[in-house]
Image 1 (spheres, rainbow, N blue to C red):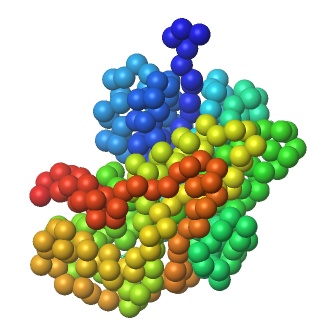
Image 2: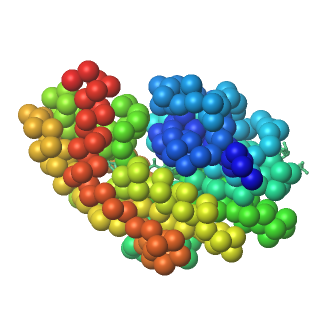
Length: 316
Ligand code: NAD
Ligand code: UDP
Ligand code: UDP
């Protein structure tokens, strides 16, 4: 149909990943409705889209019902960093669980396809390495991270029960650590912390001995994975790991950031937070096989873009 545009709802659309997703969807010719309660999101992240007639912003909290007409829903609303999700843990669980129920109820009514931003945290502190989707995880149900981990696990349960019970089209992505421009400068995540500290010539804070590992995916690669999963055939429901399998120790990351910023910062050790996973690396064979997707951006290249962004926002 001439002039027809897919109507896409993005919850948490003014956050780090959500704002990049909104931009890509508008570029791809969709009509985008971004909803956000601005708990961790920022208008600055989407200000460049506000004058676009194919972009609409609504202040709304996903724990309340929402009645709109859309074709696809990306459910990203949820604080993602420990500092933010532990600030009001009850609200975090409500956002994941009530938010999933409301968005699934909406998707059911309008027959929309719905994507869930799940997380590698559903694996907890994994006893299997790397983690395939078939691994059930090792999660503490009553710890400081549980509001996030168990909230996301329950959201996955809801997605699969709505799928089995009502035949809904679902797409569940398990996202591993992602970084890039528009990360929050002070949300305590390791990439933003190290870059901000290096640019301000402050000590680089390594928790524990820095031998714990993470695998970091650049945001553009991740967003491509989201849209490929969403447009995959209906029988592809996930859960599907999305992330970069290249693994680095936290100490290596610190050294690379110091090198790329040319900073004079020194390394400083701090206590390791409770339940901090030792090792994390996605097994992305499922995504490779079914979507033909794999990350392309090397850590050093992604870090350069992210450093340039923080230099601009910090005025350095
Ligand atoms: P973010 O904090 O930048 O974005 C989350 C957005 O959701 C924010 O704009 C926030 O204001 C909004 N929000 C929070 N509670 C809400 C509510 N009740 N109603 C409406 N909006 C609400 O985080 P992000 O890194 O962009 O993460 C996006 C999604 O991806 C989250 O669901 C997160 O759990 C998931 N995820 C992210 C990563 C990562 O490395 N960034 C890893 C795994 C999973
Ligand atoms: N809901 C919504 N928008 C809609 C349809 C439903 O926000 O367009 C919410 C509504 O609050 C409801 C929830 O989704 O409580 C779950 O809907 P569902 O139809 O599964 O359950 P029910 O309405 O029977 O509780
Ligand atoms: N970390 C660190 N220094 C910091 C922030 C984080 O050493 O300033 C460590 C943290 O203990 C963890 C890793 O870096 O081992 C990744 O932390 P982040 O909070 O970014 O992500 P997550 O633990 O959720 O993977």
